[in-house]
Image (cartoon, rainbow, N blue to C red; front, side, top):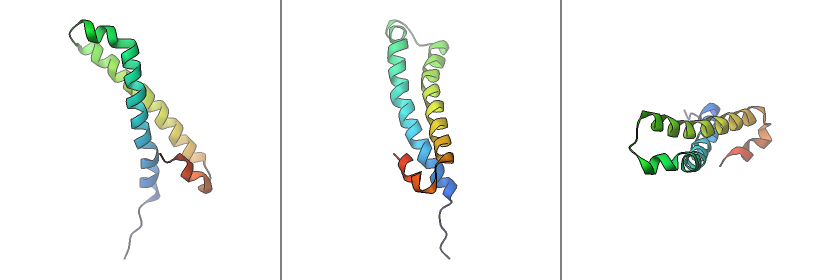
Amino acid sequence: MIRMASPMVHHTNAWLKPSIKTALVVGSLLTVINQSDRIRSGPWNFELAVRIAGNLLVPFCVSAYSRYSAQRTATPSDSGNFEA
């Protein structure tokens, strides 16, 4: 018997991978803009690590939520538009 992949697995990959890419690009830019002076000037501490993690987490959450909600409301003929 041949099993077909669950639509949820494809659905998850369709928004998760692009969201990670977006978080890395946007989060890196935010880190350079907002934290570059602290990164260059002194030793890293827990507060700086939390700020950098926040710079990555916020764009991931926004991208993941917007892609996920767009896919949930898309018609089956539109589903190919959200794959990156």
